[in-house]
Every structure is written in C-alpha cells, then in structure tokens.
Amino acid sequence: MFQLTLDEFDNLKSQFATSSWGGRRTLPYAFTEHGILMLSSVLNSKIAIQVNIHTVRVFVKILKMIQEGNSFVSKIQSLELKIGDHERRIKLILEYVKKFESDKHIESECSKRGRFGFKQGDA
Image (tube, rainbow, N blue to C red):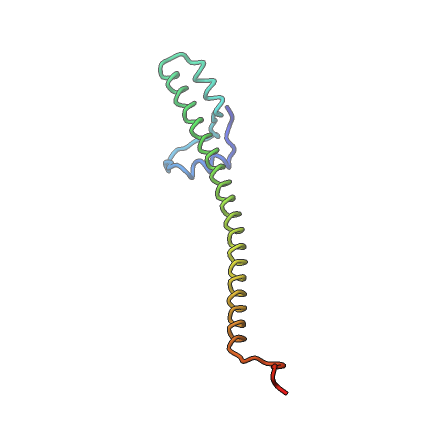
C-alpha cells in the first residue's frame, strides 16, 4: 500500500466525477496489484476469495492485452518495412518497363527508315 502523490491524486480526480462540496483533507492510499492479492488471500471469506480470483483474472487479461498490443505494433512495423521494400521494387520495375518501351520505340523508328551507308551495286 502507498499514498498517492498530489499529481496522481489530481489526475485521478480529473478522471472521475467528484462532488463540489466536502472532499478529502489528506491524500488517499492505494494498493499495488501484489498488495491486493496478498490482502485478499489473507482474508478468509467467500467475498475475499471471489475478489482474489477476479483480481487475478483481471491482471491476466491486462497482461495479455499488453502482450497482444506489443505483438500488434511489431506486426505493423513489419508490414511498413515490407511495404517500403515493395514500393522500391515496384518503382524499379516501372523504370525497366519505361526503358523497355523507350527502346522498343527507338527500334520501331529505326526500322521505318531506309537502309543507309554503302549499298552493293552502287558505283
């Protein structure tokens, strides 16, 4: 268990509706996840056991969400790298196609012209 700092308490107050009258004169205390588990495992009532089970399930879900979030981020980064590499390769392919078309056009123009240079039979 630990006491919240003034900044933590102000942040907590801004997230929840509080009454405009009265209020706390001291900073509140809070339990860590381990503190809650220890407290609920020491108490031996049906409610304490249910709270303990529920708390463990919540923390497992939170950890799973965090791990899936990290996995999701790494997948997105991997996709970005692949897309960047694909984009580079597509640009290279387009350059080759343009060069091929240009060479084909030049070849076509050359074939339309008549022969030039030394012609056999000219004398």
